[in-house]
Length: 335
Image (cartoon, rainbow, N blue to C red; front, side, top):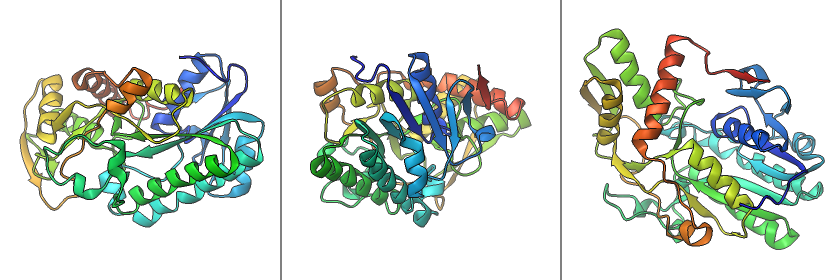
């Protein structure tokens, strides 16, 4: 991968969150000059680096976006009010308000002569009628239209994709858009309502094992299908996309499809325990089936996410287990 910005300032928004924290860590490891931005107080970030310019800013405000990007050449916009299905199905308006973040960040990037702008979109942009069965074909990039995305969150992401396109067409701002598919790994949310399925299942299995319970709750009937991408693949793919010539939105996701029951089987195997499953058919469960089609990313980048689900889950399970034993162990400060 050829770096286009070896010395200029790189801005990462959403840096106090899961993907953003890992991205800041990788950019720092590569010797980049990084500014990290998040709405949360720095002490609440999942990963903090003392030699990084860490700023608490509310990027729904245009002036804050100007402060965030000032002097930068490259921007990774990962900031959004979002979470797992339990959050996005019940907080549609809050998810939609994130359009302010990307709109104002694009305006600030243009005003401050940013050279390259990355937006983290989502597989939730894909048309609902392409996701009605557990055995749906994998989702190609063209399957986003005609548009019927996930209510709230999916519409926000699709609208923001269009904003990136038109800022590139009208103003010459080079934008890159990744449609992430279910990213998971250590140093992210695993409880509180915003967590996604891999972290939630790990937490439930660990809690049952620690308490001696003999069952766990499962949202839906366990036959919904998904693919899950480990964070290391996400970070590599994101950077590769930013430094490529790919101007249209592209999938960054695993094509290893599993049912939720199979996901639980893997976690139980890691835990060395089996539990009875209580299926809650009224709980939020999202679309029936979703998987990433990686034909385009293989063609354009000669690469696709490849970390096996079991390998990533083992690392994720161990981290969540340690965090549940020692609360707040996840808040790591690096010097």
